[in-house]
Image (cartoon, rainbow, N blue to C red):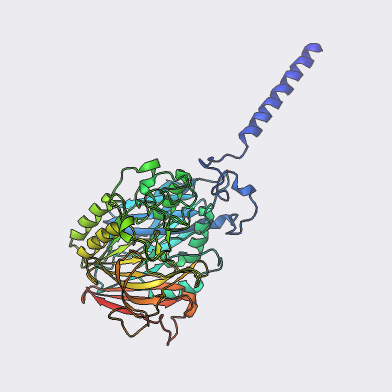
Length: 538
């Protein structure tokens, strides 16, 4: 009897041990984030978080593929699948299917990166002359479908819609933008940065952005580049990827964990054509500057923040902030030190080679912000700032080198960031000897607006008759600029809207259009912002 009791006890103990082991094995498993207190809504045991004010992460499981975003270049298709966070028991693979020969065919399967929840597909030997439907698939029920457009190589006019600054002060839909831009049917979309203003929760904010705008890039190529708010900073002077020791970043570098920055850049730029420079930078960050050809237009995509020098500790501080100059009597030459960097040697080399390539008829450079101080009032209409070191007007020698390279390429420049739409003809050695530039308006402009408002309220030399304060001016760094159009926030739509650029490859003309947020382009009689359109002959 004792022997029987002992055997029974042993069996019971073994059963308990096995049960406990199984329960341990059944604990939720996930890839632990390499950073803390960042992206908490999408990492680790994300399902235990409270409902997000940004976007609901717990979507029905047939909707876990939020969107796809793609480009085609040099006979290569690159498409990123962006997912909502997955539960531990769900598959970590996504499939790409193409509609060929009257049937869907799976061409690739890729693993989902749990840090950011995206997967990248790369298909080489892509036929740029065909339009092909695609489908992204997760599990048995979740799909996202779209169209890979054929390259418009036979079109005489290539069109680009350009947007930036998707402020979280308005978390509503962007249906009017989608409706208007769809009516114009651009060949390419460009988001110049600040798609996210939720500094520590990029994945949730990126998902929100994608759900707002996905109908624009579901069926056409799209360029997205991150700017300072995307990577969690109010301003960014990247200094080749170094670590910043200040939250405001004005000592140069990136304040947040490098893996967080990598996640942001992976989400927004992995689908771009392969980068020109592939070697790692400081902290293991990488560059994404590259070019994309659409029809007979070649777009250079540059990083005007990543290599730029921070002002703190390098120049004498001219005001209460290291990056603001309030004294109009300061000496601009005193801050134009030769060791300071803007684009840096790698991008100078890239732009020079790109500019020499004559395989396309027209060229444009796309970046985050403009190459001058193009605003007088910052934040509110009573706050005048003489010079802003966050702008690409500084360092001046770096600005001039960049503009010469753009001019030598025969290109125009298109950017965002400033919350103030402007068209400027740059001067380098003299007025009007540089390239033309269009800084597009903010998508939402109820946060840190800016104004073009000369203190003497007088026009510059050689003004036009469209707006009162046009013509030739010196900015706060004594850079030469010729202001041709501006849309101050007291104007229609509070200055919010989007840019639309037409490249006429036969006439070699570029037309800059600037549309307010609240217009309806499906109806007749709508007007652009005062001062637009601006047509230039290259």
